Amino acid sequence: MVDEKIFVCRCEEVTLEEVRRYIRMGFTTFSELKRLLRIGMGPCQGRGCREIVLRELSKAKGVSISQLNPGTFRPPSKPLLAGLLSDVESKKRG
Image 1 (cartoon, one colour):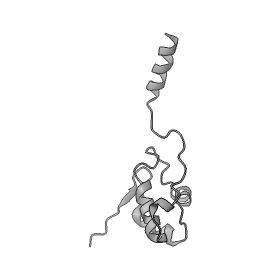
Image 2 (cartoon, helix red, strand yellow):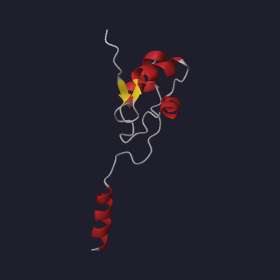
Image 3 (tube, rainbow, N blue to C red):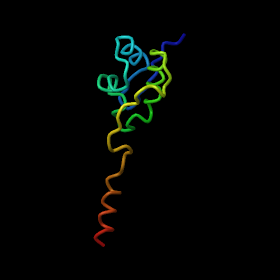
Image 4 (cartoon, rainbow, N blue to C red):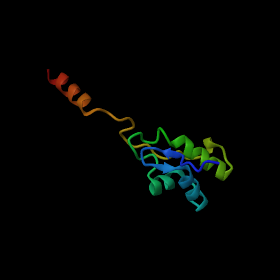
């Protein structure tokens, strides 16, 4: 078996083993893992890792993913280029 690091959260470089270890330590909500590991706090805002972490929590707790709290979403929910905002303002003035 290859001892390979599987990155769950590429933005914050959090591995699957780290997530599983924290769950075993008793941190069993997405919000707790977010505060401790910073999952879901990178540029993608959890679009890359949220479902994987929720799946791990679901397996550990023995409940369906729909019964878990997916955590909060904070703006910006999607990254924007600053230039897009300035174009909107210049069109309003023009």
